[in-house]
Length: 300
Image 1 (cartoon, rainbow, N blue to C red):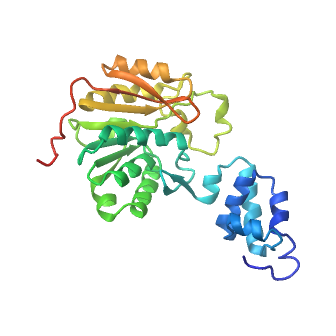
Image 2 (spheres, helix red, strand yellow):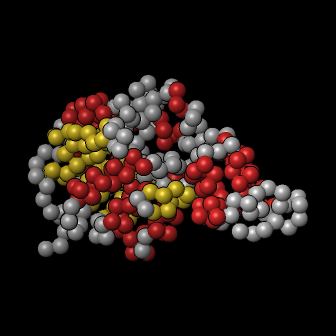
Image 3 (cartoon, rainbow, N blue to C red):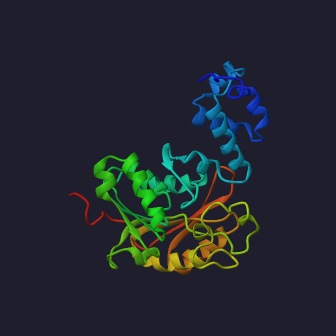
């Protein structure tokens, strides 16, 4: 830790700042780690250490942003997802731990398959697509988003986190509205995943989410039940599944039954919901009729 240079710069100790910053301890420690270069262990070992003036000012500005409700991930500029450090900003939702359930489901369905065609709809920061491309070296992963700014950030994350052959080759990005963004209207997939907008237009929680992009929360088809974009997504995606292929969607805590009904109404089978670590039905999935066979692009 850099010691202060003079009384004005060094008048606040680490311990004093922790006590006065007005943040949960975990958030405060995260700021000390990223902005002051202090690990938790060093904070415990040297709480009396003085904060350098420029560091102290940076910490105060960051703490003010967090107290105002801005997500800590935006303040830090990154969020961990599936063990990967993703850059994030106000152009994308902050990746949530619950969304890792979609990745777990996808990996379970893909199993040991060497090749598969996977589509991530509403990719945002690229979290799901990049995690799958990272875990399945031979999967052909495509990702769609309606925001050009989000896609730019997702591409940047892929360049940083994946080998060049994955980031620039087998992982492809498309700008547009759901399946309409894909250049080939006849293309079929072995797995389609999405964490789509699902917050109701007048949901009381939107104020707490005010720093995150409204389009990613309520979608282009905002409505009272939050399912406007999910209805359209299911309608468009179901016919693009290969025989036996799965469509899996994240949704709100009280939307599982409605989403299962939409999946079944689209002619999909075995609709069921998966619970997150809190026991909440968070992901619903169903499969196309028929039995999954090898990808037409798979090696002999």
